[in-house]
Amino acid sequence: MLFYVVTNFAVWASTTLYPLTWAGLVTCYIAALPFFRNSLLGDMGFAVLLFGGFAVLERSFASIRERRELAVAAP
Image (cartoon, rainbow, N blue to C red):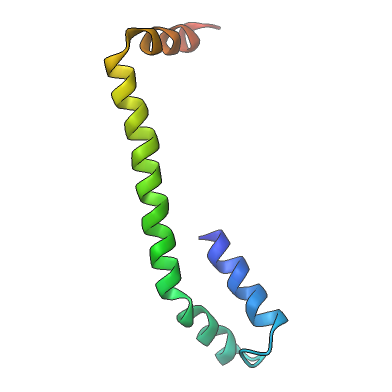
C-alpha cells in the first residue's frame, strides 16, 4: 500500500496530468485503483506461492524441517 500512496502522490506532484489541488490528488488516486487491485492480487498470489510452497517442501523433506527446528531451538 505504501508503494501505491507514494508513487501516485509523486505522479500528482510532478506531472501536469492532474491539477495541483485536493480534487486533483483524489482524482489521481481514484484513477490508479485498477492498477492497485492488480498489484494487491499479484502480491497475495506470490505470497501464497512462496510461503505455501515452502510449507509444502518443509512437510515433504525432513532435512528442511530438521534445520528449522535446530535454528529455533538454538539460544
